[in-house]
Amino acid sequence: AMSDGLREEVQNEHLEYLIRSEKIIACGPLHVATQEKSDPKSVAAGTLMIFNAKDRNDAIEFVENDPMAVAGVYETMTVHRYNQLDVTGKFVSENLYYPNQNTYQMKEAMEYWGYPVDDEQTKWLNW
Image 1 (tube, rainbow, N blue to C red):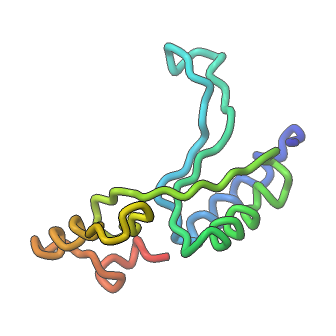
Image 2: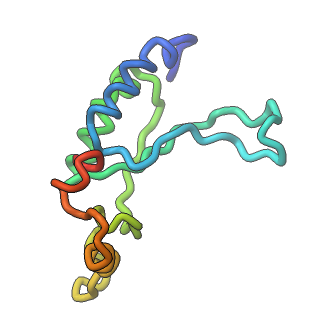
């Protein structure tokens, strides 16, 4: 479990790790649901990270090496796989349930319309 001030102590190292990884799609704290965001009862209850990984082992290695995890800030961690609909067309996952289904339609459409979809064109999205 977390000791007082530990999160703040490793926060900069944690942010640098996430940025340098170039894997993060979205990341941030999860708060207890309340009617108003300003309600003091809406305290942070965890962290949600959506990121790209080559496989489950890569995902586990990534979260286990996060400075917050190494420092013991996180009491528990869970890794889940998901099929995403990515509007950039770059990070489309193959559909595990329907492997013959074309899951690259968005990427193909974006490429047709002239949007950047390749690693060389979207260096800011590479991992």
